[in-house]
Image (cartoon, rainbow, N blue to C red):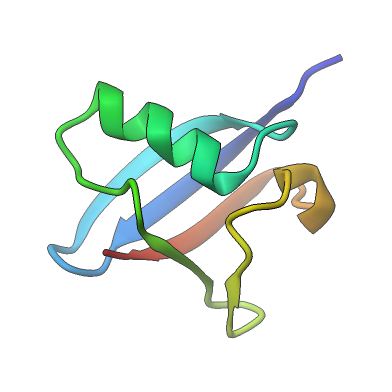
Length: 78
């Protein structure tokens, strides 16, 4: 079974865009820790905003709880 979700993050602070495959079994916080280790962006303590639902998402729950399908575009506030 594929546990990957393709997500495009727009980092609001500097308008950078990154596209990543995240593990839906992990939380945003755990996935963002891995991203921070790999790339130069400081996203470890970022707030995740869903522009479609117009809410900030809980970074402590597994991604599968959000029922994302296919491709998702979110904002990161650092």
